[in-house]
Structures are given as structure tokens and as C-alpha cells.
Image (cartoon, rainbow, N blue to C red; front, side):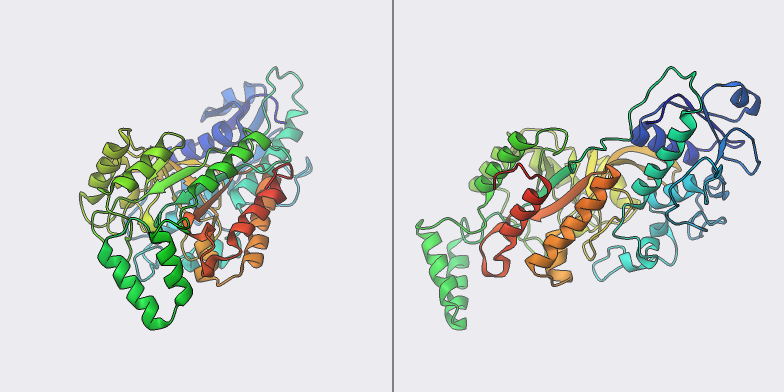
Amino acid sequence: MVQGMVNIFSPVITPRLQYVLGLIFRDHLRVPYRLTADRTLWLATPGIRIHYSNEMLPGSFRIPPSGFLSETYEPGKPPANDPMAGVGAPDAPDLAHTSWPFDLFGAVFYLLSRYEEYLPDAKYDRIGRYDPTSSWAYKKGFLERPLIDEWLQRLEAVLTLYSAQTASSAFSGPASDEHGERLRFAPTYDIDLPWCYQHKPLWVHLAYAAVYFLQGRWKRLVEHYKVKMGHIPDPYDNFYWLDQVHAILEKSVGSPSRETPVYFFPVAARHNRYDQNPKPSLAAYQELIQRHAAKYPIGIHPSFYSSTQPGLLEAEIGLLSRITNLPITISRYHYIRFRLPEGYRQLIAGGIRTDYSMGYGEHNGFRASYSRPFLWYDLEKETETPLRVVPFCFMEATSYYQKEQDAQTTLAEMDRYSEIIRLTGGRMTTIWHNSSLSENPRWIGWRKLYCAFLTHNFPDLIS
């Protein structure tokens, strides 16, 4: 536990430095800190002392600056100073080491700002998304680790050792976030296809029936008929089951170990190969959205083309707001299709205050090398914004479609993420779709996978 005021000296104070110190000390470690460029004042102030300079100052802990945080962004140019030089996961600290092995502040800023996505050699996939294989974390083998969480856990250990030497301190701050035994779990759901058969026009039913007949898919034909006639429930209609799951989770583990689930609904007005949601005018779809909005936070799932067609995002946000009669301030881009900085600026202009798109569709892992929410820094404007970014590390569709994993392998993958996040006191945000929790032939066993994951991490949960 860090005790006392953390006093930080830097001969140069910039917006980048102020941003990253706010995230580290105010938001993550939750300890008071003071930044100054006045060395005399810094030396005279009691408490823990950190200096971000090239000097060697006794009685303090040094973070060596690379010069990166003193730069300003220049379009089309890489940084003049490399903040990632020598970066790695440091060994457990002790008082014999009075300096961090690399520019911690610069590295944290580089990864959180997603600087590499602004670089001229940034690569994008066929649908316009940043390619994770060109990221620093992927190339260095760190994509599946919340590296910033790990670094800051080590930093907290360093400062705890130093705070033990400042017994005059009157403040006793909390440890960084919740370091309990339970996993901090934040489930989210994308409702791309609320129903498999129900609430579709007659011509669609006839077309599907003809396809099933011609292909000899008799089980699907019979299932389709039974659902249409009301004899069995629609296989994608898992909403009541999810309600039960979260009601049990709440009773079993309570806050703060689990977060309230968030549901994302698309309201694209036109169908295309990427946007297959029901028409927003459909009464049953509006009732489904309204029922969830009465119990859970819900967000807009902007359509595939919303990030490239001017005005489309704002129209969809307005439509969802009219359906729910609520302001819509949460979002996640469909297919995780957006680019920085334009995508996030669009969200801010549309009234969005929290976005859940910080992750990859092609690879699971930590896109910003961090598991917890953080404020987005607009690199081109060199300023912190009010947009709260919530990173996700796992999406079941990625494991199924991209990695072609079976349910058992995916359960092991989820458990790996949960263990490393639990050990760092972080937050595990996941994406599931209601359709993958069905007993549709392609998804058989995945609902059991989800239940097994929950019981592994919350043993008192009755599945």
C-alpha cells in the first residue's frame, strides 16, 4: 500500500506528461500526487519523490525520460525519440534499484494513445481496420498481456517500499484498484441478430425454407417450421436465460467483483452483407430494446458504414434514443470498424461519452495493453478528451471464426485471460453475442463454455 503524497519533478511539463500522470496516479493507483518543475520546492516537500529527468538525484526514484513526452505530434512522421527502447516487464523491484529500466511514462502514453495507429506505416485489413499484426504488442509477443497493468503493479510495489521510509506521512492511500481474489468481470453483448427465424417477412421464411429443402437440411427446415408455428422458442432468443445468469451472478458475488452487463443494439436502416439487424421500425425489436433499456445500460452498435458516411452515426444514435426515450451515451462500433482519430471524434460529436470498441476483431488481446477504462487522448490535438474508453480482451466470435477453436480450447483461453487480469487487479471485459449462446449446430457447447467460465471464476455461482 502506497502511503503519502507522491512528489514528481520534471524540468519540462507537457500535456502528454500531465495526461499519463493523471492516469497512473489519480485513476489507477489512486494516490495523491504533485507535479512540479521547481526542483527546490520538490526537494523541500516531504513524501515519496520521483524525478523524471536525466539527473541523478539522491533520495528519490528515477524514471528516465526518452524525450518522447516533450514532443508534439507531426502528421506522417514517427516520433523523434523512441519511448519503447528497452521496454519489457521489469523484475520485482527493491530499494537497491533507484531507477526504472525504461521510460515508463513515455511507454504508457505511447500504448494508450495508440500512437502506432497514426504512423505512416500503419497497416489496415480489407475492411479498413487497423491490423493488429503490425502493432508493437503483437510483434513483441505481449498482445495477450495487459502490460501496463503489470508495469503499474510493479510501480506500486516500488512506491510502497519508498513510502515505508516516509513515516511522517499522514495519508494512507488505497492499493491500486481492487486486488481481491475475485475477478473483476464486465460482460457485454452485441445483439446483431436477436432472432434466427422470428419476426421476419413471409418472403424471407419462404426463401429460407426453399434453401433448406434444396440442400436437404431437414433438421433446420423442421426447426424453422416449429419456431414459426410457436411450438418451440427461437434458438437465438436467449435473453431470459441471460437475465437469469446475471441475476444469479449479482446474488452470488455482488459488487464490485462483477459489473452490470451492457447490451449493444444496431439500428441500421438498410440491410447489407454486414448489417443484418431487424428493421428499427419493427415493434417486437423496439420492445426488446426497451425491455433491456429498463434493466441494463444499453449502447448503440453503429452500423458498418457509420464511420465513413457523414451523418449516419448521428442518425442512428438519434433513432435509438427515440426508441428508448433515453439519451444514448455508450457505443461499440460494429465489426470494431473505426480509425483514429476520426472514429472517436465522431462519437464525441454525437454525444457518446463511453466507447467499448478498443480491441481487435481479428485477434483477442489487449489493443492498448491495458485492461481498465481510460480517457482518450487526441494525439493530433494534443489534448485529453472526455471520451471514456473501455478496452475488451476477448470476443467469442474471434475465437470461433478467426482462430477456429472449439469450445474447450476457448474456455482455456478465457481462463488464461481471467487469471492474469485477476493477478494484476484489472478488469476483464468480454464480448458475446446472443446467437452464440444458442444450441444452433455451429454453437453447440458454447453456452456450456460460458457457464463453465463463470463457475471457474465465481465458485459460489450456481449454474
